[in-house]
Length: 413
Image (cartoon, rainbow, N blue to C red; front, side, top):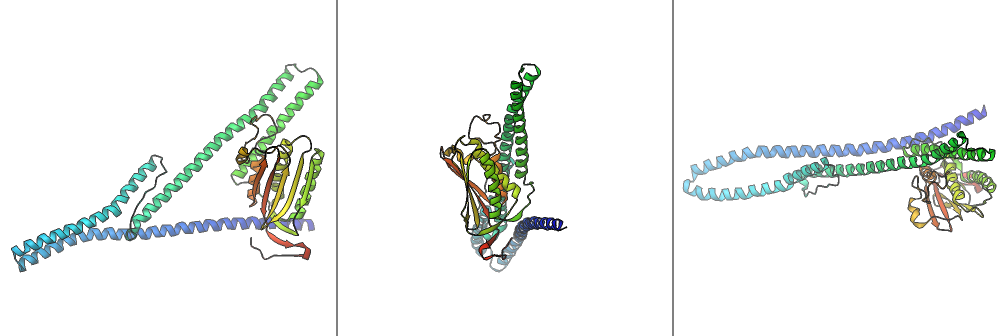
């Protein structure tokens, strides 16, 4: 009964954290919708102002004509034809100057931006999203200015969307090519060895055992590749389930390092773990997923390290509001020109991609995605032939002082 209650409490805690993350996501969506609503309301206000301005122009034109006719009639009646001719000429000149000034301003501030917008729309219809409309529209005709700004913002979003689309398409092509390459080699090997066995080429039991062992290794590799692809696709689509819980860093790292120490000593590797933290702290993690990130990094160090005297050293330290975990080895290191690509999927330092069949090229990419899903980061420093050092930083959830036997609970999720 007690164990069942503890499981329910633990499940409730996980639901609380997942509910909190969902609340934060909904809150961000609400603020984004509010911002878009405010922009829409501002657009509607400017639109009404422009309509009023346009109606005023249409109304003032006939009023101006009627007013001019009335003035001319009164002048003919009171002054006479001769005096009127001079006055009328001056009046016409002033009127033309004012009308020219008005039309020039209208052309500059209304018609010219509209023509630019039309040209911009034509460019976008041709697929050219790298277009921007420049306008010097004044504040009293803010609707046109807002229209130009909205068009430029739309063009930027379309350009960004097209860039993301191109990157996804390029990644998709690379993914298909890499999967085809990585699956073809072991499948061809398995097929060739099975055909040799079926054709009776392999007679001795020793050779048959060697062939079967190679077939098994290749099937294990293909199974691992498919598992890594499935995991990475879930991470990429943000559909991987995480079971977050609050854990003490010291206890978690002690258990984790004890397990890795046993495995590495079995492989005749030197292993050292150093805890430089004072006191303890609490972090919110998924034990299984974070363990997998550690395993991918340490597994790479063992896989590509030297066969003799390989040393792996792990240090735990406090870095402001984060914990820092350094994973250092004395292996062959990573060339400087390879470092920027080390976390790319299917990337291998060795150009001979089939040399190590157990390397899928996804381990470090998955490790990075898993660490980032915890709100952390992962970086690497390396010198060729001197080893590499991976640093994982994870945010501290609750500050804790075990020496005084109390916990600080005034924190925000």
